[in-house]
Image 1 (tube, rainbow, N blue to C red):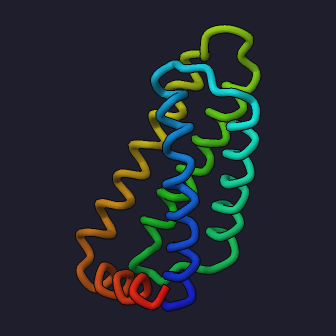
Image 2 (cartoon, rainbow, N blue to C red; image 1 turned 60 degrees about the horizontal axis):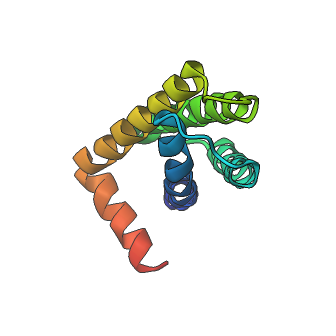
Length: 126
């Protein structure tokens, strides 16, 4: 469990960094290529962290949500990078979906007091 929580902490740190880029795409702002490249690297880290450890049963839903965040974020970044003018509505929708699923995953972590306590203990030792 501790190993998985450590990987989850790493993934959540990455997702929080991606949040700024996803918010910009969601709001229809053009994102410079260098920010998209940085976001892609962080997304690769997120996906690697989530795929490298099997979640305990009580984290399976959160794990699935975070994997979906990765899929939606990837779609948003790809569509935004292909934009030559306005950010496509599909990119904005994908970014909004990633942000909503992220909020839902974090809310589920907050509802699980045991997981929250374990996660907080992990953060203290960080």
